[in-house]
Image (cartoon, rainbow, N blue to C red; front, side, top):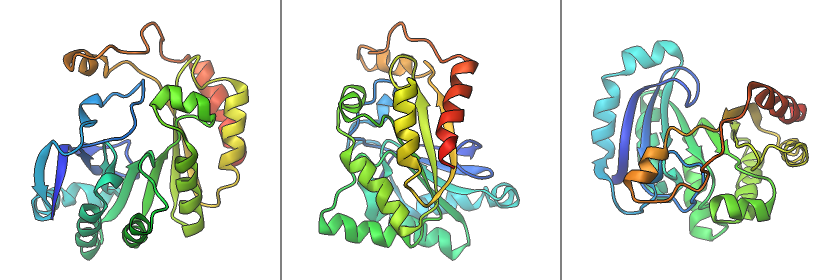
Length: 243
C-alpha cells in the first residue's frame, strides 16, 4: 500500500502529545487563504511511499518518541483523501503500541457509504484527531477556504458520536474570524460535542507566503498582520467557555 507523501518531520512538538513523527500527505480540497502548505494542494502528486517505508523509518525514532508519550501524526494536505493507506499504516503502528493522530480539516468528509465504511475502519486504529475548524459561518467559510462548512461540521459530529477524542484547532485571522460574534457561535457549536479534550488557538502567521510566491500564486491576505496577544487571549477565553 503506497501513499502520496509531501514530506516527513521527525521531531514534531505541536502536532499532538509528546514528540511526534509527522507525515504530511499530498492533496487537499480546501484552498485556505492563510494556508502555509499551499504546495500540498495538488492531488496525486508527491513522493510515493509504502507503509513499510514509513514504518522502517519511524522505528528508528521510537527511542526518542516513546518516552515522551508521543507517536505518529498524519497531517497534510488532507490525510482523509488517502484513507486506505492510513488504515494500513495505523494498523502497523498499533502492532507496536504507537499512539496515532490525524490532523484534518474534514474537508473531504462524506456520508457516502464507501467513505463511511472506510472511515469507520480507520477510527478503530485512531487515538486522536486534531480537528481544524476554520470558520463557523458558512458564507465566510466559503470565502476563506473555497468550500462550505456543512460537511466539516458533520465530521465533527461524527467524531463526537464515535467518542473519538479531538483537539479543536482554530487559526485566528484578524478581520476574518476573530469577531466576538463568530467566536461565540463557534464556541456554542463546540459545546455540543462530547469528545473535546483541548482547544488550541493558532495565531495566523505569514511564514508560508514564500510558498505562494514560489508557486506563482497571489497571496490573498496581503496586509493582514498576525493577531495581538490580547486578541489571542480574548479568543481563547471565548472558545474555552465550551469546555
